[in-house]
Amino acid sequence: MPQDPGFTDEQKQYLEGFIAGIAKKHGIAVPNGAPARPGAPGAGDPTAIHVAAQHRAVAVGGRLVPEELAKREKNPFDMWDEIAANAAAGRFPKGLDVFRHKFHGLFYVAPNQDAFMLRLRLPGGIVSSHQAKGLADIAERFGGGTLDVTTRANLQIREIGAAHPIAVLSAIDELGLTSRGAGADNIRNLTGSPLAGIDPHELIDTRPLTRALYHHILNHRELYGLPRKFNISFDGGGRIAMLEDTADIGFAAVRVGPEKPVAAGVYFRMLLGGLTGHGSFGRDAGVLLEPHELVAATAAILRVFIDHGDRTDRKRARLKYLIERWGIEKLVSEAATHLPFPWRFVAADQCEPRGPIDRHAHVAVHAQAQPGLSYVGVVLPASRLTAEQLRGLADIAARRGSGTLRLTVWQNLLISDIPDALIPEAVAEIEAFGLATNASAVRAGLIACTGNVGCKFSLSDTKRQALEIADYLDARIELDQPLNIHLTGCPNSCAQHYVGDIGLLAAKVDLGGTETEGYHLIVGGGSGADLALGREICRDIPADELPHRLEIGLGAYLARRDADESFQAFAKRHSVEQLAALFGAGAVT
Image (cartoon, rainbow, N blue to C red):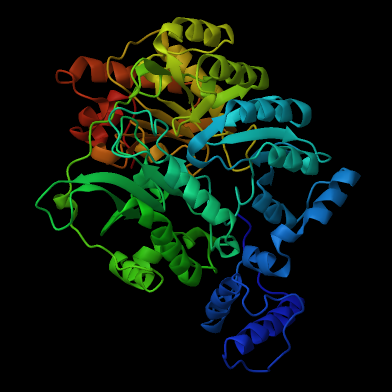
């Protein structure tokens, strides 16, 4: 991230005038009463709460980071004509305009690629066949012809040239989709249970909830330009894990039985402050919410984050750090002032335990709640699809199912609502596009971030190396228990390496004066009922040595485990030193 270089004289003059104008509007005395800057938010403008928060940060001696100055010097959503002019001239953005473009979902990914990456908003990860075909066309016409499924059940289109942003944004809008707020300091794609509405084990269908919050965000200007990015996840209590405990706000469906402090039924517990890349899972806020209360609860927590999130240090500008400063009780109490109803405080032990999670339910064929219908989980090579493959899957979904594709946080997709009699034909057609509907334990649980092919922060080619690991291990070892291997290219942890059975964090490794790609090895992570942060057991393994080292460690697990013991349980009962030795290395010192 860009570092704060301090204020120039011009910035100081602007800041004094801008703050004075806002302070005058809010009745706050400011020395040197400078006039307000033209274009500052007017009375009744909901975005003024952001400027007031910036003023409070400066008033106590803080220094706003460049991104905060960028947001108030030029509203990122007032840049359409500028984006169009750049496109006509074939120019990419420069300076802080690179940051502002992210508000439109456009990421200029230089120096790794002299191109844009576009990130979408797909609430709950659900896309129609028509929309999927349209996105495939966009990827072919304006991008590199591929699409990536992300760990937020989203899609990214890469290699978009300087001349094409307006054409791409227009085409997406005409599909009934948007990328508004998909990057930068905004609420990212809302994740929800991919089996929502078809899972025989779910407690509640999360689709109406993700859609309601999606439209609420799109229609409330104050929910853009937060102190930093914000993740929200909904878990309906079904077969597929949602990693809701890794989000800033996680809503987990629970059932409450009779003779409890509240009426029996299905509610949601609210988890706050998840940020596993920084070593934290979401903490239970101690409240139960009815489904219709979730949007208001979200808005209340967001309002507190807007008012009090750190705007002077990008590394600490997440909800986790506000909770560290205040404590979760103060956060919940402050949020209550923005709620139209009182919190319903109920201890977690008054709720029934969550139902079991099937770690392979996102791949292969599974029966739905609807008799005679099944869904097919499609395995994607390192989460990437060609436009031709996506178009083909969309066609299969339209002809064999209900025209619905469901993306998952496990970087694959499901085709739902297929009559059981048509499953063999659907599977054969999927495989004809070079895709699988079943996979080994290694390949089914393989997660990889974008890598250094398209991300300037990544230190390694994670997707290529993930496939090399899968090919190597599948030829040499057979696992009968689910296993997740997460490869992430930098500490931002887009692939959430700390919650994998095996987490791999990219590093540059010095081999006698020559620098090569490599990884630090973390083991024993998990989420949900298996909540645990992985432990780093060794560092700086060269990438070309990694597959063999994993073979050694997994072979030791198979040879020494107790009957049917999971890898996580095996790792838990061994020390860091013992695990390092099992993987053929010395322990971290």
